[in-house]
Length: 78
Length: 116
Length: 245
Image 1 (spheres, rainbow over the protein chains, first blue to last red):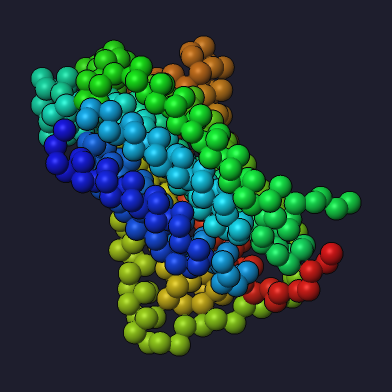
Image 2 (cartoon, rainbow over the protein chains, first blue to last red):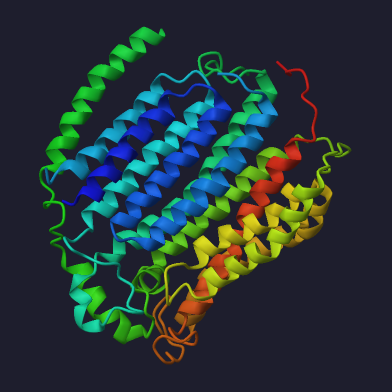
């Protein structure tokens, strides 16, 4: 396995832990967006450009938008 | 070493589950559900990968090298799943907002009892 | 059950699940040694059979079109669920006052709307030749429309995405997919069979029914995401009431 794949797998694994351990809601929305970008890099390294495009568009645009709108509605709490 | 990607997929699944179990806020819980979903995408794509493979797009790749391309079926399943996943996430968030509107709290422990 | 007991139960169950996963994964082929014949067969024949250069798009809209039909129904049901949950309990007279005051933000944002929509249309249009397609481009188009809200105000956004038009577009586009399949069934072929002329490989006019299904998927996804975002943004207009229980 090449180094790039190992590095992106490590990034994704640590990104998932980061998303779960963050307690502040707005911060978690942003960490989730970064996790989505790490996933997109992994998908690209696995030779899946369609899936990477899908993940970038969804994880960096649609999900933070909807999450932040919901968080604004209920107020920032843990 | 060749089972590392599958191990990472399983790790992400378990980490997401841990987040769901120990969550004290519905919106945090919903984001952890999406993390569990993402582990399935990683698993699907790693199953379809071929060593020294290339993407199954033949615009510039000559057709003679078609056997070098990775599996397109898992990519097709995953890309529709990702987009549909965001709408399901929105539905879950709408449910959480509704619960908040009715009871004023987002803590899953306090929302346990179904009243009347 | 207290949090500690729940965590202990999860630890026990998690260890069991980890063993089960490890046992299951050990039965898979090594990473990088894909064994199955289906993907290889598709790679070999799809371009010749359908004259499109993206085998992934051919799989999504033709070879596995039935699965995409199911996914579109999930999309439609989720959007309908969001609309149902959030529209019912809202006061009709709430007004969202949120015009963006900063001139730079307005200027840059409104300037970006055109390129964003154009990029979305490009990704949809060439989706069966290069990476892209109805699903990805649909979300991009919806994001381009949301830029109108981010750079302007909610009133401007609700003008470019009126509720009736969005609802109608989503319903019609989601119905067009199975309607096409049923029409093909009625005319004597198989459900979702590819019967239109195939065209030349690599040009936009290729693939038979694939461009049609591509565009209906794009309209469905755009309408669904626009509807969902509009519902969530309108929620911001309603003041927080005291809980009813």
